[in-house]
Amino acid sequence: MSQKSQYLDDVSADESYDQLPDDETVEATVANLEDRGFDVVVVDDAAAALDAVTDRIPDGVSVMNGHSTTLEEIGFMDLLESGDHDWEDLHSQVWTIDDDEERQQFRREAQAADYFLGSVNAIAQTGELVAADASGSRIGAYPFAAGNLVLVSGVNKITEDLDAALDRLEQFAYKLEDARAQEAYGQGSVIAKQLIYRHETEEDRTTVVLVRENLGY
Image 1 (cartoon, rainbow, N blue to C red):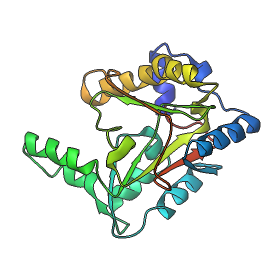
Image 2 (image 1 turned 30 degrees about the vertical axis):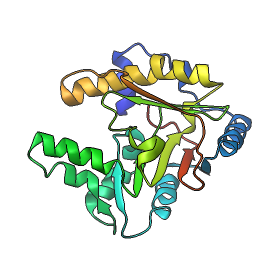
Image 3 (image 1 turned 60 degrees about the horizontal axis):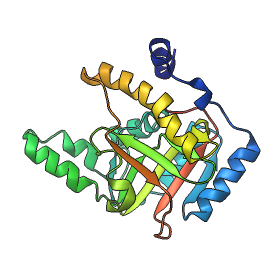
Image 4 (image 1 turned 60 degrees about the vertical axis):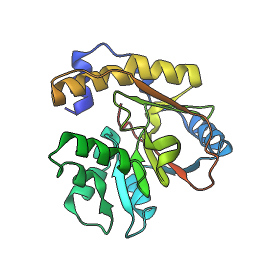
């Protein structure tokens, strides 16, 4: 049983927000994302998504990521932790710092990594991205801080419009993340910091890798 399936057994989440859309919907979403300044790559599966991500990160750059079940599912976290790459892994450096204040400061500085990896909670067919977390450490880099941003998402996160995307965050993604946080940290989560990413104004900065699979929350 997958991690998501286990959590769905324990929480009341609206699974209508977690379905695979038809090709026409995906194509319309891609077109609208591109119109809003996002670069978009569509791949068929998790293995292809990992290739698409790694192909976009040159050797020698600094790399940071926010927590993402999707990055775990495509194998990016395993690759990062294996050391089988030529990047400066800022994520691993965070947990070598014993002092709490120093660690927090380093996490803030790591938001400005050359490449920041993450995901979103919903993608409106109209082209907006919606993401949230409790501390802001996952989404703080998205609007500006990171030099380059790569967001990976299953097409199951596509919704009809922005209102539905916000509903997906509240009625589906948050409930699963709350269960995950309770299991991982011993306390639940909260939608404290929320981002509606409507446009990317910097050319070639932000890439959305859309995967034709049901991934993440």
